[in-house]
Image 1 (cartoon, rainbow, N blue to C red):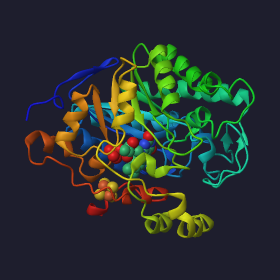
Image 2 (cartoon, helix red, strand yellow):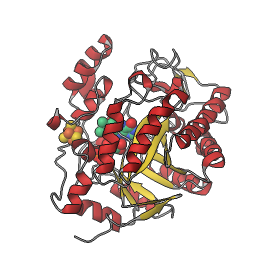
Image 3 (tube, helix red, strand yellow):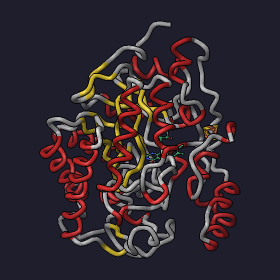
Length: 388
Ligand SMILES: Cc1cc2nc3c(=O)[nH]c(=O)nc-3n(C[C@H](O)[C@H](O)[C@H](O)COP(=O)(O)O)c2cc1C
Ligand code: SF4
């Protein structure tokens, strides 16, 4: 089958060998917040499996941005491991990206140095945490952390960074009117809520943008009443294009308040409770999990309608993500004007998914969207239930 999927295309300073990118999907393979051999093996296998670029997930730009014990923290000590990872990916002919972010009010105090920061403090039912309101000095400090993290990523051999501004983490908490109730210049009208993101992007681009591809993962909608909607996403996309980012990954949802909006389907609450170590959270998840993580209907390419709205107003490369599993579906999205497609679960299910599409061995992924791989995130390594 001819089509776009196996044609090369530019993304910022890169030319990718085809249109497929492994999305940032938390691997849970960084004990001590450092790179493990498992993490290197996994990304090497995805690169060998045919993707054009693989994205290491959810690296915190500072200790206060950590939400898991086994999450990467992008600091000097991580550099040798990251260098081995990027070398391994490059040997397979793929590019390497790393997602950088700060979790804000989703911090786990035992690993984040006892700090939990939010645009507006108070009780966060979904942590559950009592974050304190972040000060303006701390906002400036975290902005610098994004720049340092991007430099470290470059020194580690990464070709691209993906700045996480979606899914209800810190930058997204600032954008969202639900979590940002500030009365200073970082809260209120859209331009104020977007100020932190704009400052991060400006600083990162001015320090590294001439040699490093910089993309941003953003929400199309937060996915619950009172959260950010598509009208605001259109403003975010316009702003980011004007700032000069090289591409946008269009996703949606809030891991705290609307987690299934990100992934769709339902959450296997029992599996999740089994993997949570904190006894209160374990019991809470068993009792209330099904109410807090309400199922959302799944269909292939579930963000397509909203993403097309963004396509109609910006010209920069757009990276589609969300439930893509079939060759036909992928070609359809590419034909509609999206330059690249990201895959999370299809590549957790089978790192060789892209090569198998290429040879015609399969036309569709065997992932059944059970979300078991997500339910394990609290303590386990990322793995598909079909291969455990
Ligand atoms: C196990 C798992 C972990 C994830 N972790 C992250 C993450 O760290 N950062 C992120 O932006 N998205 C994360 N996601 C969301 C994916 O990147 C992607 O947006 C979502 O799964 C939809 O794509 P898919 O249908 O191809 O899986 C995760 C998804 C899964 C399945
Ligand atoms: S556990 Fe396997 S089948 Fe279920 S969503 Fe994850 S990759 Fe797909």
